[in-house]
Image (cartoon, rainbow, N blue to C red; front, side, top):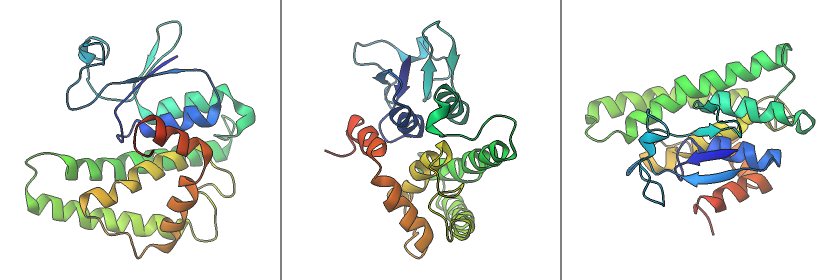
Length: 202
């Protein structure tokens, strides 16, 4: 498999999932600012949408959306329990979390990274994000991870997106459960490996 990513972007979530899975893959940097690969290839010739993540299977088929990619990865290694089994209620809860993180958090943070976004719009986005993150903080009370004691691909996604808060002035210092979750997740070997691979830590 080939995995296209941009350092620190949402593609860090499937990068973590791949590291957790132990599956063999080739990681290829596709910076979102330049859309140029190391060898000079125009990334748009590979993914016309131009964004990351992108997973290219050995037979050439592609998956472009993070929540779909992480579930695909998890289903290749069911013994790792990165996602509950398909058809179970717990799997739908995982999908609920992936959808919530993608639409309520990820998209909200994206506004704050958008060049030229008016300050008024940013203020509205921050207020909305804090409210959503406060709810997540409550959901994490008494739990190690979103689904309970077991780490799932939804946790990797939340770790990445909530971690953006320090870059855009969203203060989550008062959210103790979320803070503990981020610290705990950051210590996982696969998370450390993904961060290191993207040059985010030494």
